[in-house]
Image (tube, rainbow, N blue to C red; front, side):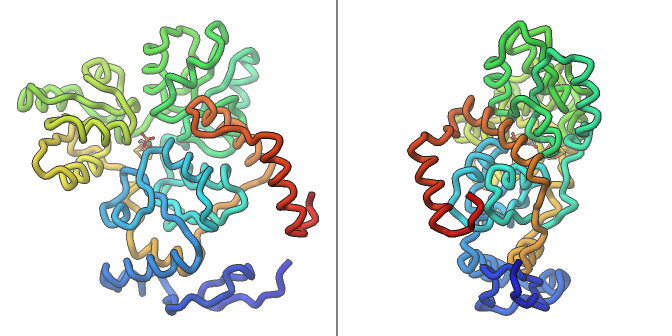
Length: 362
Ligand code: 13P
Ligand code: SF4
């Protein structure tokens, strides 16, 4: 327990953050909303240095957030970075399950979200309780949790997956073993088709942004651009995926945009705008102009600057849930070769470090 007095402005009580920032934090978010972008950017950079913080941004973030992110990527790349970074503070610009994943993988770090309301409605389709009930009905099944799920759901799973490794994750499980796949029915169906499995029990959840994309919209886009490569995110409905040239994650789409000149892109609209910005001489057509994730767009520069100055909103969770969720994520990262269990020697070194720090918990 620290006796450090609470900073009236930043509310920081942890001793490691008691050194006052070189610039003065402003009292409320409204004060930040009134600042010009240049000043917000300057504040963000300065405060990042003071805290040894890293800003992780998802591919769907607003351009202004993408510009100040240290790493921009899909869920897999961001969780790999969260498990490897040596920063003390991670500010996650994405949605809640992504920040939670960072905390699960880096419990010793402070993980912040600029806006707590940035949740993922697809993740909310399944709760720990509901999943436990389904598991009781299928005790022999393995549970695969799409990373778009809560820590409690991940804790109930045998292994997690993202849109870029779902096929590999499912293929890593014994073929005859039934699989409960939560919460995305479209991704589950896509994986079943790719792996040729007929023993996947899919949860009936979906992403409103991708599930609402229409066949008519694809037909119109193809008619106007018959030579375009069609790339679609696997959260889209099966009938659209069947017409795609490539089905891949958001970072997969970014890679394809490097290689091709004309793409019809079936994912969140913001990614299309960014690619147009990055490649002004190429043609990128949104499959649906209405595909916008309002939750991802809740973050902005003012909230990010406020978050860093005030060390809010901190993501916390129950340790028992965290450690079980971590096991499911580590299994996934092992399949993706992005994480390796520490060797005995590394474990010893880590323990020696803990002991010499005198925290007494070892
Ligand atoms: P990616 O992992 O492909 O970035 O997808 C995350 C997401 O939420 C897509 O809607
Ligand atoms: Fe969730 Fe869909 Fe938004 Fe991705 S696009 S964060 S799945 S609601």
